[in-house]
Image (cartoon, rainbow, N blue to C red; front, side, top):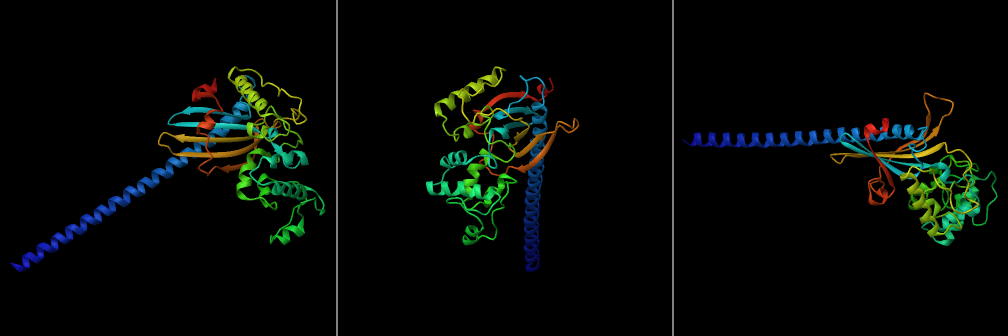
Length: 317
């Protein structure tokens, strides 16, 4: 009788162990299935976001000026099957070219930056020293001796910036300041001035001599011109920085997709028109995936820039 009791206990233990193993296996499988599903959905969201770049290229090339998209920071939305895509376009001619901007414009940029006055002067001079071809130090600037004294194992390139990311190497630049500056600057316009018709509100706010009320009224007028299918109005001030000359052939395109299960992905691409290649009308100059959680086109602030929504088939009409 005692042996039967022991056997029963052993059987119960084995059954309990098997149930625990089965539960653990089931939980592991559910977790793995969830991970696989998340990976699949994220990949799908990325694929849809990348398709937004092709859509932007098509709409930028539209010969109908009323249907063509404008690259002044406006946001366009496409409602597709199981997903929404938001696309923002910015002309690089509407930004500050860090290789061409003079000291006055760079100083105005830094005045609005989240740094103190002493840092402002030092950063402007350090940028000028980085891009000029000599080793002469501007007032408050930095050449190779200053970088060495700061414990850095590199020195200014003494040639034009090759990318906006290179700004991070300039003495005095930190991560937070670069994150603030990056959307406002470019190396692609080749212009010392800014095309104010294409400039975002944030760029207009750092241009010297522009009144905030004038900026607000112009942004509103420009928005209404898009909604009413009218030409972009000229900036209502004969500013020395109002330079519509130069081709708008380089664009910064941000495309973000959100699936109905809330999976999302975004890409940030710089493209250039290729007039001589009909098969490939645009050349990709820079491509990056947007990973920061706070950089999204699906916010209330970005919704204020939303000018048009399309159902996917409408793009082909």
